[in-house]
Image 1 (cartoon, rainbow, N blue to C red):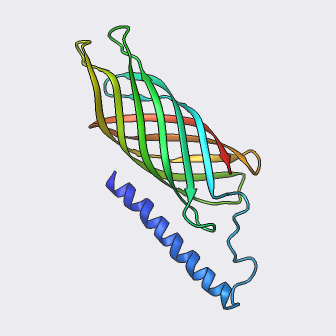
Image 2 (image 1 turned 90 degrees about the vertical axis):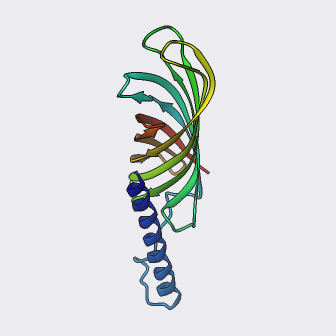
Image 3 (image 1 turned 120 degrees about the horizontal axis):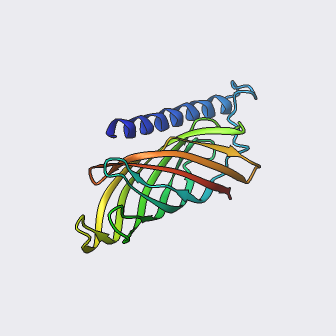
Amino acid sequence: MYQLFMVVITLAFTSHLGLAAEKNRSSTGSASSTEKVSTKTLNDTALTTGFALPILPDSGETGFGFAFGVLTKMEASNHLFIGGDLGIHFWGNLVGNSNTTALQLLPTVVYTLGSNAKVVPYMGLSAGAYLYLNALKSDMMNTGTRIDFLLAFRPGVNWNINSKVGLNAEAKFGNLGGALLVLPTVSLNILL
């Protein structure tokens, strides 16, 4: 997962350097109008809300959740966003009728791979606290509150419905406290 994080950071840094060089060319008059970066369809801040399906493949545990997020552009002409990936997940228990509720609080970096298309692919990385409320042990005893670390890679695609609204689909996956977590998410993206 560390290598994926480094790829995202490297792409963001490379994009930033390329845009800075382009700004320098345009300020000296050597850039044509077709070389300028367009930000027509991506605004500075995006709010997301949607649904998630948390799955722990190793144990067979599944759940249902709500996803929330906010992303802000680093610079107006850049493809790099930073923000937070929040969520509440309701985990079922395959052995009994009890359940566990969990909150995710993840700082996030997202890099879009285009800006003017109707469909924009992106990749991101989220890392942070995954807080279990009324967590259960395998013997069905309540252990109270517990915190695990979640590191998630976020490949996805945004379909721009119009200039202010988009639909995101993510195949989010990563490491949750040493276990593989798969977290497909579909959300509505509102650009401010």
